Image (tube, rainbow, N blue to C red):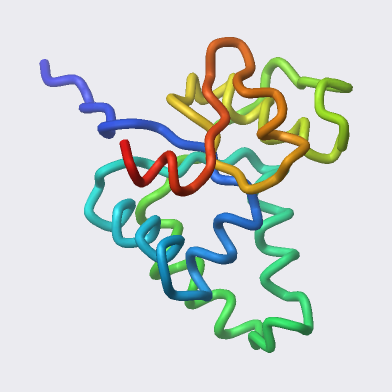
Length: 140
């Protein structure tokens, strides 16, 4: 009886990291090639995914609904995992809107949270889950 093998590592990417990785080149673009190479599995909760989808629709990115769907269907969904939140984290981050990433990481038993957000990075870690920058993640 073979068990489903777990991806190398499970990672919660904050929305800005995700959007930057998908839409811009440079170091952050390496995040996409790493998940496509199955070096890690991006993990979402319904809340983090909804925010990601909403941000992709911001006018400054000039993406049509069709382009957003294509990005999600081709670049993200085949490689990610969605977890259910059982233990909602509230009031930990200075910006309470960022607590959803902590909730997702705990539910996923994530190996780390990758963020450029100072409100998350200042924590350093949460429940033994490191919160690191893109550069630190790519150097792992």
